[in-house]
Amino acid sequence: MNSDVILPPQVAWASGVFANGPLIRKTTHIADLPGVFIDDDAWRGCEPQQRVYDVEMLDSPSDEGSLYVGVTHLYAGKIGDEFFMTRGHFHQRREQGEVYFGLRGCGLLLLQTPSGEARLERVKAGSVHIIPSFSAHRLINTGEDTLSALAVWPSVAGHDYAALAGGFSLRVFASEHHPQGWEVGNG
Ligand code: F6R
Ligand code: ZN
Image (tube, rainbow, N blue to C red; front, side):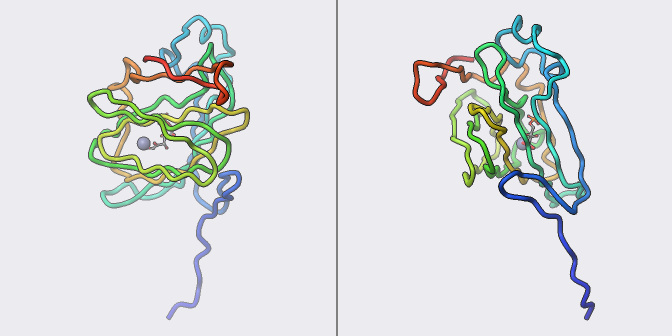
């Protein structure tokens, strides 16, 4: 028997930072998110190269049955009255689900069915989110610190952003009138 023990990739639960893994990184800037925020003038007035989120994922096989693991670091910020959020997507293969684990910060996971029914789940360190099949999903950072969440999803799932070009049916706006600091509005 081979006594060599493999040292697997590691993630620091408190920060979501990976170590010892082959990583792929993708940064999304304000300029990459046209039409995502409702206040277009506010979006145009922002520094286009400001980072909104980074995704770090382990470079792993892409065949049927394989899984991807990645962490989204969604920075704190607002455009108009909306918090920084991810673009959001359906999976190209709609039947493929996903699991998100909150690691740090606080925010919301917006889920939406194909018929447009939306719901919100609170994301914080330790929260577990089972994203069912046929569900669009988007992270929203309602806090003042970086929101980091670990995701595990089937490699074959793919991303369909175009299906949400008209936006989600629900938006979250910053509000001083609510103790939680936000309120829900229509998309
Ligand atoms: C993968 C997944 C996450 C997101 C990431 C960025 O299926 O849900 O890794 O890809 O949070 O969000 P999008 O892809 O919507 O820009
Ligand atoms: Zn996804």
